[in-house]
Amino acid sequence: MGIKAGRYIILKKLAEGGMAEIHLARRVSYGGFGRFTVLKQLLPQHRGRRAYEKLFAAEARIAATLDHPNVISIHDLGKMDNVFFMAMEYVHGVSGAQLMQKVARSGTPIGLASVVRIVSCMGDALHHCAHAIGPEGAMGILHNDVSPHNIQIGFDGTVKLLDFGVATEMGKKTTGGRRGKHAYMSPEGIQKEPLDHRSDVFSLGIVLYELALNRRLFKSATPEETMERVTSGVYDKPTAIDSQFPAGLEEIIERAIAVNRDERYPTAQAMADDLRAFADAQSMDLRRVTLRRRLGTVYGEDVERRQNELLLFARSVNENAFEESGTELPAMSPTSDIDGEESIPIEPTPTPIPQETSIDAYAEGTGNLSGEFDILTTASFEIPGYGKDPTPPPPVETPPPYIAPPPTTRTGFFIAAIVAAIVAGGAWFVGERAGRLHTEMGSVYVDTNPTGARVFNGDALLGVTPFETKRLPVGTLLRLRFQHDSYQTQHHTVSILPDRPHRSVFMALKKTIP
Image 1 (spheres, one colour):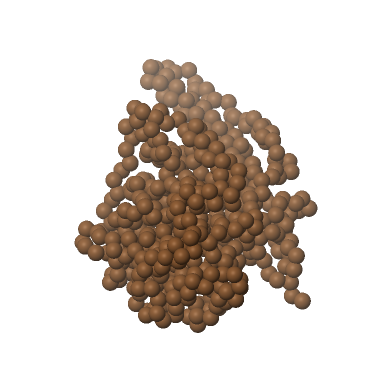
Image 2 (tube, rainbow, N blue to C red):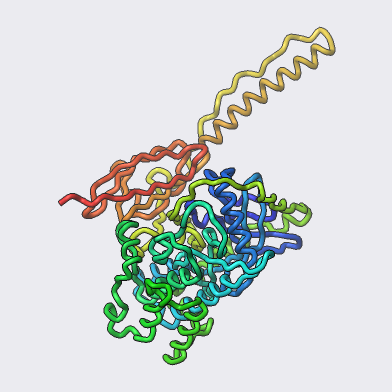
C-alpha cells in the first residue's frame, strides 16, 4: 500500500475475486488535484494468460461504451509493467449484499421504498446496456451476473451497476463457457441455451425478492441443488413468508422470475416501469434523498466514520508530489494478439479483504457468497507477544574489508581500490538484507464457513472468524486450531514468508457426525 503506480497511489486492497483484485487508490495530478478511484487488475496467477487478458480487455471495452447514471463508469484503461488495469469510478457506500448483512445484524429494515428504488434503478441500467451503441453499432449487452454483490449503493442515495467481467454481446460467440453465480442464473443460462435480455430480467427478479425479504431465494447447499431449484421454479412466495407483503409487489416478482421466459417482462425497463407504478399506487417516496436518509438510519454513525477514513487517506497522500513529475500512464497495448482458448472458472468465489480501517468493499468480493447472508465482522486484536515493535535484530557480523597489498604501480593501486570497494559493498548488502528480513511484517486473514469459529494458535485464542492478525514478523509460524459448536475441530499451519507476507486461510468446517 502507498505504492505509486503512474498517477495513482494505491491506498488499500478492497477485494479479491477469481480473476482480479480491487484496490482503492487516489489519482493525483497537477496543482494538488486528487480524486478517489478504484483500480482493478488481473491476479498475478492470471497475468500473461491470453484467455484471461482477453476477457479483461473485453470487460473494459464493454464498460467503456456505457454512459448512464446507474452504471459505474471507467476513467482509465492501460497496461503497467505488463499488467492490464482499469481505473473505475469510486462510489462511497455499500453493496447490496453488504446492505443485507447489515440489516440482518442490526434488525433495522431498509424498507420496501428503498428496495423498489434500488431495483428500478437497476432496471434502467440494464435497459441502457441492452441498447448500448458501440463503434460497430448496436451491442445488445447482457450483464450475466446481476446480483446484490454487483450493485453499489452510495451513502448519498446513488445506485450503480458494477462488474462487467462476464458480460457478453448479443450474437457474439464467447469463450470459456457460461459464467456467473448459479443462484442468480436464469433457467436458460443453467441449461446453456441461447440467451437474450430476459435472462438479466430473471436475475433482477431474484435480487428484488432477496432485498425485499432479506433472505436467499434459490441458494442451496450445493451448486447442483441450487440449479435444480432455479430450473424447477419452486420457491416460497413472499406472502407465504410475510402475510403483510404487498400482493402487487409479489406479482412483479412472479412475472420477473417465471421459468418460461415468454411469461417474463420483455425488458428490464418494463419491469422498472411496473415497480414505479406500484410505488405510486402505494404512495412510496422513491427520491434519492429518501434512500440517503434511510441508509443513514441503518448505518448511523458508521457513515461519518467511513467518511473520516476517506479524509485520512486523502490527507496521507502528498498530491503535490506529482507537480513536476509529468508521469503519464502508458497507453493500453492493442489486444488483437490476445487470442486462444482456455478454460475460465464458471463461478469464481470472491474473497473479501478485511482491513484495520473499514472502507467499504467494492465490486467483486463484496459480501459472503457461500450459504446464507451470514454476518461479516472484522475482529482487530494483537497476537500475544507482538503488540509492540519487535526487538531489533542483533547486528550482523561482517567480514573485515579486503586489504590489498601496497600497489607497485598506478594501475595496481586502482585495481586494489576497486576490489576493496566490491568486497565491502557485498558485505554491506548481505547485512542490510538480513536486517530487512528480520523487520518485515505481515499478517494472516482467517475465515471459515460457517463464520464464528474460534481460532487458536496453540493454547492462545487468536479470535473469532472472520478476522485479520496484525504485525506478524516474517518467519512467524502459526499452528491454527479451528473450533465451532457442532463442527469437527480442524487444524492448519501457515507461515509468514518474505515473498508472501500477507496470507489468507479459509477453512470449510465439517459437521460433527452424530
